[in-house]
Length: 160
Length: 199
Image 1 (cartoon, rainbow over the protein chains, first blue to last red):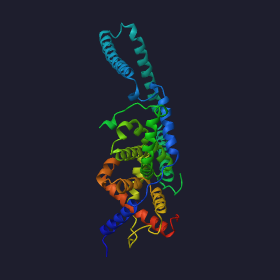
Image 2: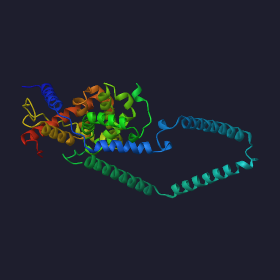
Image 3: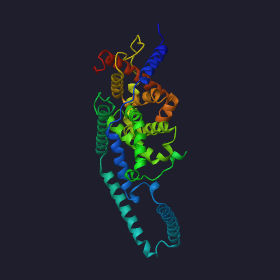
Image 4: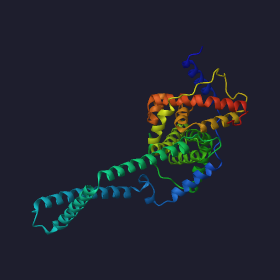
């Protein structure tokens, strides 16, 4: 009686022999024309629409210099803003008015949210959680079914 | 290596001799590139896209490739990498579902039909054999077809395949074993039917 290991080795060798004797597939006749058409299309693109590696040297250098300047400026601006904020007193800065307004609006929104949550009964909360979980499970199942049907299923011979 | 450096794409029509030389180069390798891409992708349309991109990269490096004895290997590597990248793009989108379903699928490996013949498809001509094998490969799910092709056609080891596909060694071995077991009845059936597919 053959051992499973022998069977596997036998199958491996059998397939190896069969596959290695296989002639190459012929490339479609249209491939050559497609390659040259695409090369022509890419060559016709202006430099700024090509990838960075194809930009002229001066453009690459300018881009790098601009980026470095912007990063430096952002660091400087951040440091300056922090220094200004620490120097200002909490009450006497007119430029801080918008910040206080924004904080007050946020606090108001938080209070409103807390009020709504407080007014909702636990039964409602549980129902919302249950419905959300059910919808999530349905979506997950739908995704899994679509994956199995459309993606995992082997392609039938000759199908595109 | 210089092949990895970028050079600007130039208009083929402005350089007739380079174009002619590249056409000859492409004709020499296009079947190999297309076959590599088609086996991995399992889809002719995607294989054409991959082959096209491979030759565009070859054109960018043509000054080095035209006289290189390693040009064929370079093209094969690029087409394999592009095909794997192409497949990976789709695989990542579905990884969650793939992992969810893969575990269940691996619990029941199909049994090998004994006795094994000495040869498969021996009554068929070479083109019929190729068609039957291509059809069988297309019927395999991607997670079985890709490692099988890398093992049997690209000569990669199990470990190399696991690293390339970023999956465990055990999964690679299981997928290849399952792929072989799935291909055997398909090839037997095609052999009995004279190359015509039998469902």
